[in-house]
Image (cartoon, rainbow, N blue to C red; front, side, top):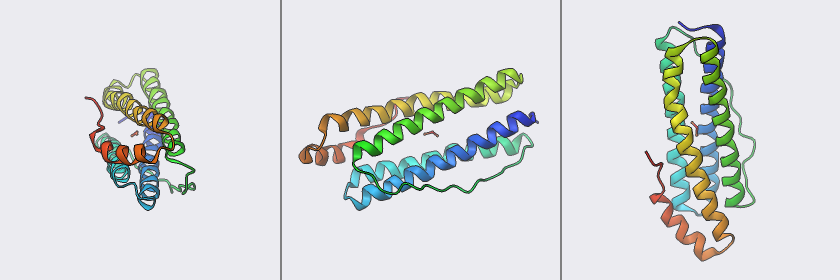
Length: 165
Ligand code: FEO
């Protein structure tokens, strides 16, 4: 079993992963409505990945005798001015998640909880890959800007963008 502080930190993190999953889902739906077939698939797939991040935390908490509290998640923003705006928001979101993982890892060291510290290393590595991936996509979109031909090709090409592991 872990300390109350770790329980609180892990609970907060699992709800952040749930929020990430919902955010990607909401963005996927917007891009699908706009006709970006490749980008919407990428975002739908990523929403599933975020759900897996949440599940990993839930399973770990349960295994260690902790309890699960699921927040009500509400994504208020449902429309975007451009793909660039959407991926900028996503990049800022991923940076925020990385920061939260860092705080949680630091808490593990303070609490001398080396089991949870070890468990969280997977998330540390994952966040490096996620930030890099979203930034790469954002850079491409900034290069293309509003060039419709470029966006059309990028929408086809996005299936070739993967996390490098
Ligand atoms: Fe699970 Fe994109 O952070």
